[in-house]
Image 1 (tube, rainbow, N blue to C red):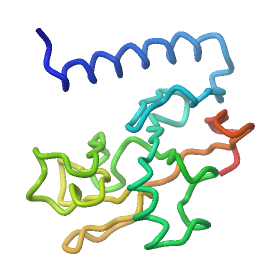
Image 2: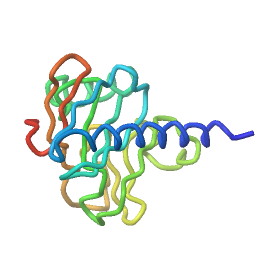
Image 3: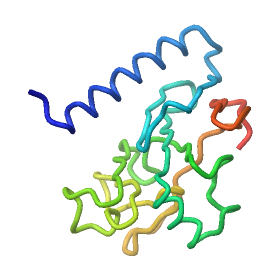
Length: 162
């Protein structure tokens, strides 16, 4: 019987297959996605200009970020979501999304609030894509070009706004 983490991976893979099939029928530059079914976690999207991650923040994660930055400074067009480049600005390795409280990374500060790890360098980032690494300087993660068309419907791609 598959473990819970295996099932999450299977669900993510299925969602990616659906998105790739949908994107094949749309412009290569943008895609519109209904995020209402996306639960807390991350969704990968590979379109021109990407790859991108779309993250639904938990209420607790959102609260932590609002206390630190204010609701107007969460680097997204919707406070529940973050849309970012899926590669590290440091190493160009894929970023690993870490949910708040993940036991595997309990010895790393990223597990206290959730965020992203670059496993190829010392860089780590919070759920706004801002660099939090004390010993590893460099740029923040680039937000994906996007605009929200409705509450949970987003256009992602090279002609999205941001």
